Structure formats: C-alpha cells, structure tokens
Image (cartoon, rainbow, N blue to C red; front, side, top):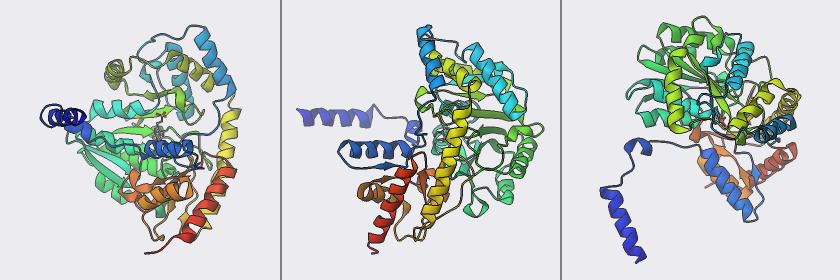
Length: 406
Ligand code: PLP
C-alpha cells in the first residue's frame, strides 16, 4: 500500500507536479544546515562547540526586551502599515541620516522581517534574466542564490586574502561595465571579517556612477568595527540616490529572533518594494518594530560592551588558530568571523567541516559555501565565549594531530 502511494507520488512529480526550474536554482545558507545537524548531535548527548552560526550569543539588552513587552501590552499585536510604523520609519531615517551623513526621508525606509528580504526585494525589482550582477566572492551565499533564482548573470568579484579580503581594483574595472545592473557590496564582510577601505569604496562609487549601476550596500555589520570608523559608499557624490542600504537589528542589538531589519531605497523603488512586502509579508511584527525604536534611541552601552567582547574573542581566536600547524588567518577588522586558510592541511575544507563536527564536536563552515574563492578556507564565527572558543581550539589541534594523511 505504502509502496504504491510512493510510486504514484513519484509519477505525479515526474509528469505533473514539477518544482519550477527557478526554485531549483535557489541555493542555501550552509550555516543553518550545519546548525541543525550540530543541534541534533547535541540533543543526542554529544558535546558541541558552536562556531558556525552568525548570531551574537548575548541576550537582547533588557531595555529593548522591556520595550517589546510593553508594546505587546499596549496592543501592538495587529497588522501595521506595509512599509513600517510611521514613527519607526522616522526613527530609522534619522539614524541613517546621522550615521551616514546623508539626507534620508522616512518615505525611503521600508521595515522588513530581518535584513534578508531587502536582498530579495532589491534583486526582484531591478534584475531581469540575463542582467549582470557583480557580487563578492567569497560572500554571503544568499546573494548568488537570488541572482541564480532570477536567471541573472552572476559576476563574482574575487576578494583576496593577500588584500585583507578586499578586491583588486583593476579586476573590478574589468568586471563593471554598461552591462552591469547591480553591484552588491558588504562591508564589514561575512564571511571574511574584511572591511573595505575608503579608497576602495570611492573607486566603486566612481565606477557605478560612470556605468549607471545600482548598488546594494549590505551594511548589517556597520556597528561591528574594531579599527577605525565605518565608511559607507553613500558618502560619495551621486551615490546615495543609486544605493539601497540594507541594515537591521539582528547583529548590533543581538535581535536575530525578533526579525527586524530595513532598507533605505531610492524613491523610485519604494512602490515596488511596498508591493513585494504586501505580497509576501503584509508587514513586519508591530511589537518588534516598537522595540526597534528603543534599540536605536535608548542606551548604547550594551553595543559597546558586545563590541569589546567580540574584539577580545577575535584576538584570542586569531592567535590560537595561527598557533595550530597548517592553519593561518588574518586579523579581521569587523563583523564576528575569521576566515582561516587551511590550504596547507591534507584534507579539503569541505571534509574538515564534516569531520570537525562529527569527530571533534566543533561546528564551523567550509569556505566553499561562500563561493569559489572560499574553497581553501574555514569560517569560524567567534560569537561564543572565550572559554568555548578555547575548547574548540584544543579540539581542532587534537583532531589535526591525529589526522591520518592518506
Ligand atoms: N547580510 C549579511 C552579510 C548577513 O551575514 C546576514 C545574516 O547573517 C544578513 C544580511 C541578514 O540578517 P537578518 O536577516 O538576520 O537581519
């Protein structure tokens, strides 16, 4: 009986119920896959150190939680306006105007459930099948996934370890042309922790103005910089009107589960983004948005404290990894990731991801999940305690010490 049903279901899938080609082109974020496997192993009693997911391990600051609870008590539990509560759009516009030194009107702000939908909505709005999109490699895997989904032509911009994970300017000039529709920037960067220099941003700005290219500036890690100050590409002439800024609350305020992010759009895009929002989410949770006001306008000491803790962990993990034979890594200047070069080890980074989890109980990510240029790297998220990072380093060293070279 069961076998019969299975056969009928397979037959239906083959002849009628096919998934679309587009949806089959969607990629994924391996962080969520490895996290699920690591959690399953932990539930079965294994000791796992989590260095895979990009999620601060700190609780959401108490003042923000209180504001969220108060909002629920005050009745912010129903649908709100599609683009966000007016007071929240106003507050975000003020915040971005201040931090990027540009003028942002609240009507340009669209509040979304996390920052991720801004990628989807931007690409859906401006990229036609066959259009070229320049994106960072290694980079956040969802960019490439969405370009492929739309049928766009992804043009990877290599970020090089020897350049502290910035790009080669001549290469950038070769890749950006009148055929380029969109250029995706992410600084501070996932997965490398690299931060683009002001001069690099200036070069990008000039090219995008020259070739009439829209920029998607993913600035979700803008508050997590350990040296110098954050620089946005929007500071250069003629750029803010051709840039979508993606930012949000997940990383800065440790609010990953509140699903609260936003985009700042050129005015001509807002109506399309509103349509996409109404077709997909209707609106973002009203009480999360109210908590967002407290996040932006309340005390900022928690942000500085988290940043300092991340800085200490960064220094600790970089030193520790560099002491392990066969592993080397640069000191990242932002976000909370290190991208360690494992090309000297006798097994691939993909096999290391699997075996470190299964045999050593250390969850981390193979760099290949972030693009071709990441093949010889492992990404470690140091959003974990010094104690746990220390334990992971010991486990990695012991595992590699016992590794049988074929
Ligand atoms: N952009 C980058 C580069 C990220 O690393 C992430 C999350 O990991 C996001 C955007 C999306 O964050 P969220 O949707 O949780 O706000």
